[in-house]
Image (tube, rainbow, N blue to C red; front, side, top):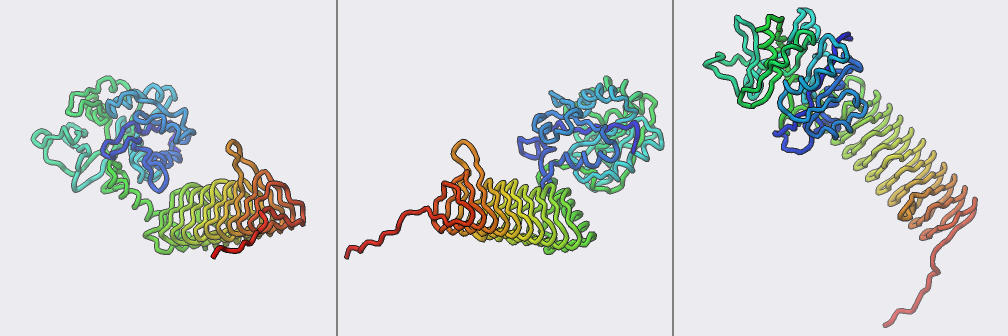
Length: 454
């Protein structure tokens, strides 16, 4: 969309005020790392031209974004934003960009539209150095924008002096910049760390550019809070709530019924079809899709699942990496683990756990069972207390249950084992050998009744 413009995300900081050893940009918002929102905003504008400076927890950030492997630059010493730019500069120059858009990695509310507006205005005036500013009643720790007859500059909060710089106007630096590589490159060696923070600031480039006679521009975005960074747990939760409300409002507009919407937490990658019903409190994250007519009850947690049309998830279920087919019913209190597949009109009831198993059409597992590494044929019935004993201490083994088989209650199926079509397994059995089609299998000790002592 903006040819010749590369992007650089500053993601090297620890985020001391987050009080966590994890990199700040990996703190999650609605199940997604904060940094993912910034990359998503940049993708339409600078496809395949995004880079990021990493430092604290660099290996963790790299693992979280494997598709960005070629775009990471490591800042081994965190000496400030200006130093981060110096470290990344050779990589930017080698790509032949005319401009670079610099964005902080802690602005999860920023959107492609906001960045596009900033870029359009900065490029229209052919600025060598442009930055976005916003207005706050309380500028807090943000860098102050100082406009003077001699030009515009940014002064970090800890270095701001009203006697020297004048009374605060409330206009602050939003941490988004557009730099022309050819003219800004010679200014990078001029950055100094003779300030209270003993850091090299990217903000100093604005003043240096002005002194060098380059064109500078402050693009005022009014009171747009979407440009504010996240620096504390309180601010993280506030940003998350803002995004959550926006997602739920969008679902209403698409024809989705969200009951108790203030308690529905739905991630940005979740796709919900018109006509579906979701009830809060619930949490739905990742690459989850919910088909039309599907119903998700309250107290449900879902990640990376496909819920097809007209299925129903009852309260207190936990689903991850599962697929639930049309007309299926799950729960209450059921757990579907990765690899669980329920085909059309299958039924999984309370306290049933399914892992890496396929339940074919019309299978019923009503309660209190574990099905792991199993293939259950259409129309089979799984009695309460059935367990597929799939692990021998070293390896996992498969259990095959044929169509219309009936597994009695409190049965242990010791894998690898195959239960034939329309076979019947008596309640309380331990099955260690295959059961042929249509046969009855009973594997339990003979009952003995003894006279009780007086």
